[in-house]
Image (cartoon, rainbow, N blue to C red):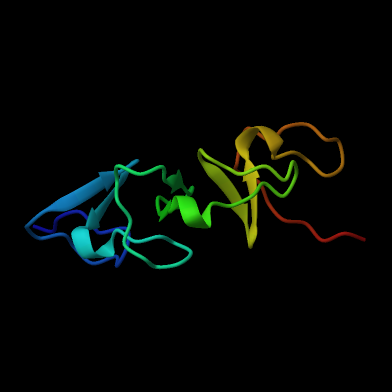
Length: 107
């Protein structure tokens, strides 16, 4: 019977101590910042990326729309980060709540 997978290394967590962060589980050694790869402390102010990985306070992202530091969940589009409230359609400017969408080419 397989156990849960570590979000950091994607290997099965068989036994030992783990860190739960959001909905993700990590081996202790795999709980590192997604940007600088330095170990992070779950007691510090961490940013939770939508992929379940943490970003340390030193590496916090700035919102591409409002240019403010993101201190809660970030929505990532490639290398760009957004606050959930700032993530909006480029055409109609309405907030995108349902993150199931497709990329289309511009004509």
